[in-house]
Image (cartoon, rainbow, N blue to C red):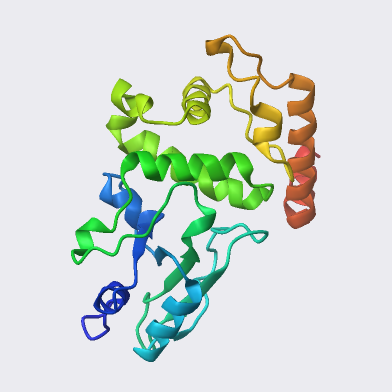
Length: 237
């Protein structure tokens, strides 16, 4: 963002509006090498935060093209703002109450507005299991994968011990690749818990059901990109 544009977080703190950094900014705080795009903030009230930022010069905007499904349309209230004339000034406000155990910070220091690693992982994993929006789940999966790639504390017993019991199970399943993640339009928690993982004595999702999911995903892909299927047919000939 240009130095001439005010920081949205400075405006919120100046008016004692709590916020928590989310997605890429939160990942980078914990060591991920992900690229920073829009600033995602979890707030107590999207309406109040939006009003305050618009009074400081922000205007309604749209997230950059090709942005993945970062919110669940069924439950998330969200607003996109940008600063006029400034590229890559997008700020995305989302309600915090739909994310498990996240309470936006009202601290005076901006460095105190990041979730802990446990809070970030738990909230992403809980949402991953509960959403029935396939595209949103894929977005969450990317962020969780970044955490496993770049955040060594995830492998420690101390990190595991601080997770809720069901998310400890999720953690084991993710590491052992027992978690089946391709179910479209389905809450994974309904299918996955309490069966759990093989490593803890549970049963994986039946392979027949997994094959059904894969077929549905493949059909969705072909419906969205029919030219790819046509190209594959030509190659086969």
